[in-house]
Length: 193
Image 1 (cartoon, one colour):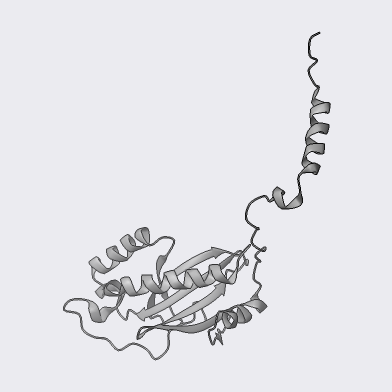
Image 2 (cartoon, rainbow, N blue to C red):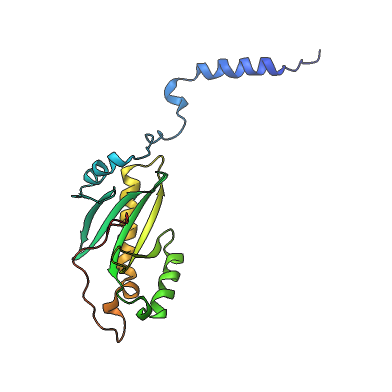
């Protein structure tokens, strides 16, 4: 007598029964999944900044600014949502460039090269309302499924990129450059200064 093959339905029933015979402790499906992240709204940025341990201040058009200090080095960070709320931008406004035409070509090209090396960090130059161009670095995060640890990691990366590129964005580090005075406050990267 020849053995009969089982049909697909019978195999499914057998697999279901066999699965129920395995104790729950043996059915682990790998490491526990991380809790779901979230998309931050404008009213939640202050709590995020404070939850990360920083003392934030409101920016004129939304977002929060705060200082990050490590080993005697301090930079300003601004967390600002994009207009449509899809991105959380981590800005580091760095320095005024009073005369954009006087910026050495090596500094500009160096910043472009650094953005390729330190991606997704990008360099930017934006004019303030007074027309003074400011240089800075920014990282943008998709504002979905975010955890505070993701934001902290991006702040840490940006802090290191600021330190590593200072010879490129700081006029006081340029060979033969005059040492212009920096304005007292950095501009809010929400366009409010």
